[in-house]
Image 1 (cartoon, rainbow, N blue to C red):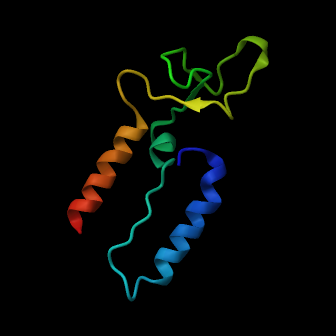
Image 2 (image 1 turned 90 degrees about the vertical axis):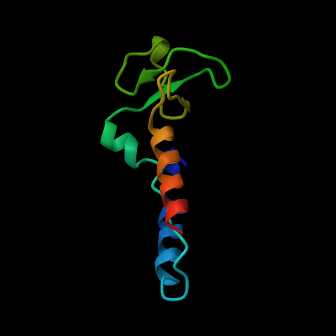
Image 3 (image 1 turned 30 degrees about the vertical axis):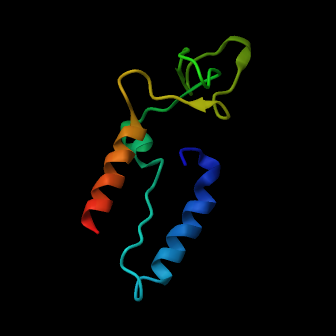
Length: 95
């Protein structure tokens, strides 16, 4: 999950993975926000199923809308979800 409100679930999954590490070696947790923080880029858009303007959190929005709860976009050049997909592929290949 890319949303910040998913952090408690991520921590719970990480704790579970660490607790069974002695009996299971094929579990992994991927931080869905890691690349957002690394790239220092995250934008939001009202358009969920259409191509629309994607603005950074610091951009001024008409009407003072907040991007916090808007759809996370990657744009036509890709973005952090692509990096996460590569991480998933690498972890699966390592099994």
